[in-house]
Amino acid sequence: MDETIAKFIEMGYSIEMIGRAVEETGGENPEPMLILETLFKISTSSEASSSKSKLIDELIGMGFSEESVIKVIQEHGEENLEEITNTLLSYAEAEKMRGTENEDINNNYLSDDNDDDGNLYSGLSSSDEENELNSFHEDGRLQDLIKMGYPRKEASIALERCGEIASLAEIVDFIFAAQMARQLDEFWAAPEVQERRINEPPSRRRKLNTDMATDEELIRLPNPMIGFGVPKEPGLITERPVPIPNIALGPPYFYYENVAMTPKGVWDKMSSHLYDIKPEFVDSLYFCAAARKRGYIHNLPIKNRFEIQPTPHYTIQEEFPLTKKWWPPWDKRTKLNCVLTCIASAQLTNRIRKRLEKHEGDPAVQKDVVDQCKKWNLVWVGKNKAAPLEPYEMERLLGFPNNHTRGISRTDRYKSLGNSFQVDTVAYHLSVLKPLYPKGIKVLSLFTGIGGGEVALHRLQIPMNLVVSVEISEVNRNIFRSFWEQTNQRGDLIEFTNVEELDDHKIEVLMDQYGGFDLVIGGSPCNNLAGANRVSRSGLEGDQSSLFYDYCRILEAVRRKASRMRR
DNA sequence: GACATCATGAATTGCATG
DNA sequence: CATGCAATTCATGATGTC
Image 1: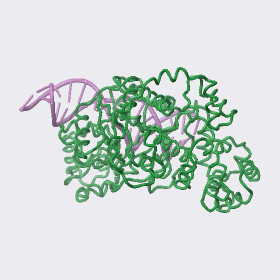
Image 2 (image 1 turned 120 degrees about the horizontal axis):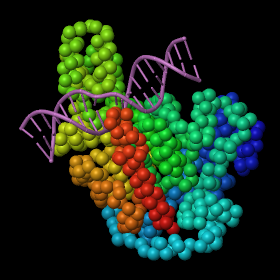
Image 3 (image 1 turned 90 degrees about the horizontal axis):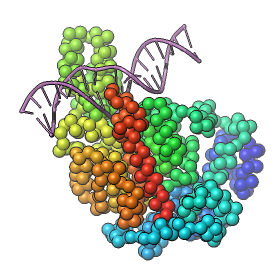
Image 4 (image 1 turned 120 degrees about the vertical axis):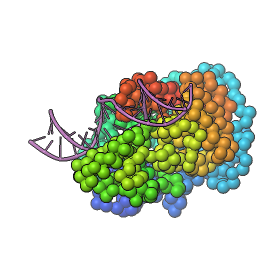
């Protein structure tokens, strides 16, 4: 503990503050991370601001206005460092994009008036980007950085780390992130002796060690599958166990999704292609009455998530009350299994009924029937009658509005719904964007499907000023366009069919035209990964699932372009 | 051709057991 | 630690009907 305190003093905190923080943190041997968080809170709270904290000075020195910094820290006083980084970067981004308007970003953020921003992205066109980039000399970059107030040493390290072709914005991002992360890093790199003194549950320590191990370690699925935490369940994590690498910090933010249970090594590979961010595995049974085990790789902040309202029912019986009348007492299910793309045959329902009538009260038969019900996700809709869900029932489970998929064949509805997001789960993750983008966001939506991500944003009441959507299926495009029209969206919708056709040039033109993207969202095809595939479960290199690499390509193009535009 | 219906395992993981 | 068992899974392809 003494070592910890010494470290705090070294970081510039006074002994009084440390004492107060330890006291407030409580416990015999509080975790240093918690103390640091409390210290941070104290040092940035209004009553302790007689002497401005080191952090505020640092942020101001980096070129943010004093008002911005104070405002953000007041607003997010209890946030972690990553949160503040993200928020300030978002503000800076928003300020840049407003361009000549030159509004005070803080007033803009705090004000409730949502005036008409229909012309927010009209007539923006830039030129000579490439020439500017090429003429960017390293010495020039160094001098620019020093002019911006960065210490020479820090600037040159960043230059070295980012490489010769990095833009100024990328380097600024790097320095910023490095400064914000430095305090945390001291603890992650803490010596063994100190580590053992930390009074933390063994499970957490094991996780910590695993995460810090080499990359050879395969990614394991967590149990319970709650990611960084789910509502109404213990185990909420407020810091990422493995921080986001500097190079991947947003904005622009991105959100990638796929099935959790893939062939071995797939998630390791996907993570390695997405900036080594560790996936967040979440089972949607914590959000609705059906399981849905999915992995999400994203660079979103994770603090202050919230659920969309109204929340769905958590059990089968509450979600489908009419089944209660027929539900046999020996079927103990309260949650359904994953909604797939195909349903059970009517023959199965018949076979089950006949068996139950013939062997009334036979526990062995009942056990077998329950197994079949689990396998095919059946619910009880009549006496001895177990039937698959109707499309509208799947819509409800997945968080879509009633009849979202109306207008296409029943077979196609099942297929499209089975391939979709669970809206409440995704919305929970995306909810952190709401305070960051009060005037709405610009979305690049890959593999849009029936628009699960957009429905989530809509239900979060985050305006979509622009959606560029890529979706190969015509019926899905029709459904999504119907949603767009029926909800009276005011933003622009631009549709593409194939991800392959969205090349670097098209991306640049779109981003110039609209001022960039705030969010890149999508889940690439799982056909060749999903366990239900008996025929072609060929892994990430399969015909459809290899489109994952197009997601990466497009994301990287967007982030590169965004870095150039930031200047 | 659109649509509906049906039959078709296996990879992976968790867990208990020895 | 090996082994076996149980549980779960964003699907594909063939066939029939209209």
